[in-house]
Image (cartoon, rainbow, N blue to C red; front, side, top):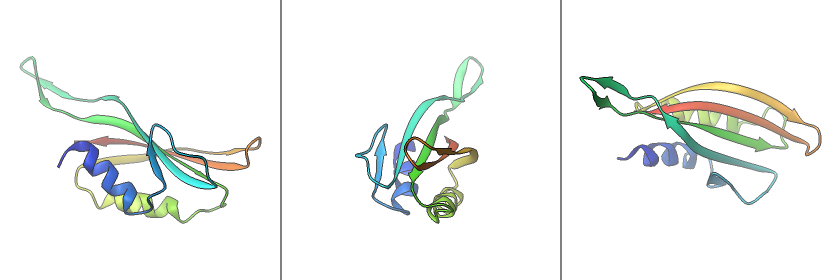
Length: 105
């Protein structure tokens, strides 16, 4: 299974309202994107490849249960390391914005 399939599978365990880099606006959706690498380099080669990225949840629901559901899905993948990065309320849009950073081995 590719690194993309691990990330997609985790999101689809919660909902199909998910997009890569963007999603058609609604009141509740995930967007994920890769943003780099954190490879283990040994002997001048990339011995272990790791892709880094973020997942953002945009929701109008305060204390949205999708937050715990995506964390559960990440925890159930032995290939995904994650951490909660930030939680914000965007007054101009009325969205709660959650962001997780992840790495996929």
